[in-house]
Length: 164
Image (cartoon, rainbow, N blue to C red; front, side, top):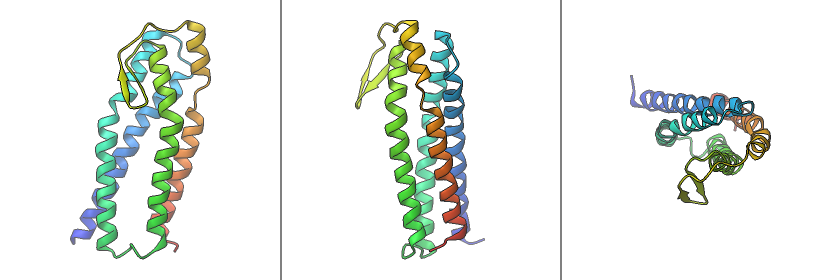
């Protein structure tokens, strides 16, 4: 088997790892919308955060192998690979902007360590139950799932069919 197939194999494995880590976070996000027990909310947030290492390592594998496969297959002159990279970057930015600030606010509201900007902060006293309810009711989970799912469909289409 040639090296190119192994690189594509790593790219697909990185994609699966990335999706697996996102699956844990997405499941926690959807459950958070209905949860009102403070300890369970904290546990769900910690579960979601704990998938971060797998997510970022998988993303590096996905990107590294994808870039290498692009060179090995001489695809960098084709539009579909650039479109794939642009879609991935746009997805990451959209999900980061829409998701991270919200989940940092939830972490702060339930008395967990949180981030403001790029600065970590220690836990503070939890907000009132009413404030936490309102925050959880404003969850962007469905919006994030639609963006992520739609983007995934576009990425798979671009890579499978290489339309341009």
